[in-house]
Structure formats: C-alpha cells, structure tokens
Length: 130
Image (cartoon, rainbow, N blue to C red):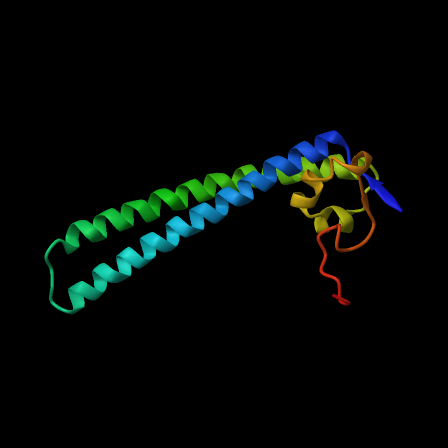
C-alpha cells in the first residue's frame, strides 16, 4: 500500500537532505582542523617550535568556526525536522513512520504520484532480510 507524500514534505525533505550533505562537508573540515592541531602538537613534542604557534592558532580558530557552523546547522535541521514531522503526521503517517522516514527518499519521491510504499526500506529502516 502506498503512502502519500505531500509536496511540502518533499520540499522539506529536500532541504534536510542538502543540510545533511553540508554536515558531511563540515565534518571533513573539523577532521582536517583536528589533524592540523595534532600535527602541530607532534612538532612541539619533537622540539620543533618553528611556526607551531601560528599553526595551532589557525587550526584552533578553524575548528571553533566550523563547530559554530555545525551548531547553527543543527538548529536548522531541528526546525526543519519538526516541520517535516508535522506535515507527515497531518498526512496520516504514524510517529514511528515519520521518525524512520529517509529524507533522501522522500525528496526523490516526486515520481509515482508522490507516494512511497510502506516497505521498511522505503521508510529509511534497515531490513533484516537484506
């Protein structure tokens, strides 16, 4: 049995999908700053202090900046997630179905008259049968 996906839900899911992709980019930047801090610390431990202060300063500032970007992103994700939950609930989705919904699949659900099947894989839930 198909489950109707309102246009507003597809739009919100698309926006969430973009934010999740942005989060992946931010994680890469956080990891890069972490590695730069680690490398600078290793240079200090080896006794090579040349330029270490500025390497630490730059990496730490980048890390703080990206953390703030990620915090702001989390707020946006939370707000859009609540809106998506409200829209799906109004369309008859259960709480468990809205929690399990795969925003990437919802955003792509424009084909097939805006419906997704009730199969757990389509709702973002791992299937035990593979």
